[in-house]
Amino acid sequence: MGLFNKKKLKVKLKADNNSGYDPWVGNNSSSTYSIANFLDYLDKKPIGDSNDSYPRYVSYDLNIHNPIKMHNQLLCDGYLIPAPLSVVLQSLSVAELKSILQQHNLSTVGKKAVLIQSIIDNVATDNIGLKTFFTLSSKGKAYVNKFHYYIDVRPYLSKGIFSLQEFEEQKNKRSYLSVEDLVWFIYNDKYSYYSINYHHEFLRNINYERYELLLNEGKKKDALVFLLATIYFDINGTSKFHNYADFYINNTLASNVFELSQEYDETVLKKVYRIAQSAIEMSIKAASKPQSHCNTLILYETFSRDILEDIFQKLLHGNNVDLDYYKQYANPKCFS
Image (cartoon, rainbow, N blue to C red; front, top):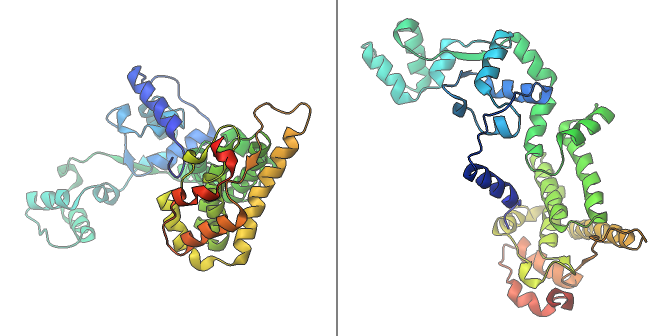
């Protein structure tokens, strides 16, 4: 298992390819989410030679199945205007720029910015034969700025933890919050849901996403808490579906722990255990109800807290952790 489990998604895409699935068949979505993200992508780009000129997420994520048609429609509607020559030239490689200069007997000495300016100053646009690029008009910029939160949330949606509808519900309730804060609220709700309806892998992934979000915000100590919580779930399981052979410590996560080791103090592990304990308590409470969901499973800890702390300390000091060695200290349930 990697940092984030995308195995199911990869299998689906492979099946689509084998079945002759064409991502460019279907109607174009006119949702604000789709238009805002598509406009953001289109800025400073030419109209594609074919639909395959556009990234596949335009189909899978934005539900735009005829991007050339949509591209032209947005141009006609005034969201895009022809880009200045400097934008077009910036898309070329240094070798391509030098070729243009050589064809016009001009100097090819200098950095890319110098070469571009030399072409602008000395070469007639009609003599270059370049594609027309388009950039956002004032109307297009206003649209993207107004709905930029749809652009900001797209990377989070791609993880599959929550849906666009769930995000929009939170946005309607708490419109004053940033996208990151809204995502945090959703993660908290999801963590409770997956604890009650026990889904071990989702709990683990939510903790990993919390770690990345906090790290991006520069909150390194809090990020370390959720990074260790991610590893906690990687070496713990459920009495029904996991055994000791399933447990692992991802090498990249181990390296990330060491990189954040200076943030560690005694409060960090207390917070890690609190995160784990909340999942345990919610699962136990749900399982005790008469109408309990049959898939609700109670998390058990593979190791005692002393052994867990020993493992975490090894990671914090950049040492390898041999889970085969720690097998002797594991909960007997791991082998049942």
